[in-house]
Length: 204
Image (cartoon, rainbow, N blue to C red):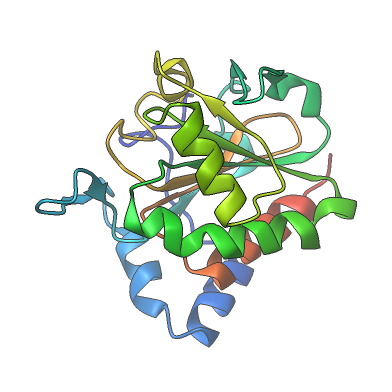
């Protein structure tokens, strides 16, 4: 079964729920239980803003490993298959997106905090040229790479899971490269950390 907007039962993990409640984000947990999870248009902003709702899939309900490759803004080739055995966090962003800028410091902190725990972060940017993307990375001191997804191949690899215009969106891949969780819109830091912790705790 391939994870998607209409498949896979949305289950909120115990730890993520507790973290969300502790952070005053119970509304996000309720939103994740509702079908669809699509964002709402942000007038004049040029992006579709998700509501921060998240969905998770049990290990037996996840589809095949995500096949995602690309070229970073420094010209390096990336293939997430090389990270099988570790947990991967994919963040879809672009420089002029206000929520993307708001969550950038927390993504940097997560990359640093989990660097020694087998977690890789990878940005996916379908819009910006090299100058705009690298200026963003310098401004927020982003320590992980982003691929220039100008042909939307990375988005296509997650078809049905991450709407093309939903920026930001964040996806957690398990140790087998399968989709374990997804957040549409700016994430609550405690929720994302809880989802990463739960995925790390799963048996390989």
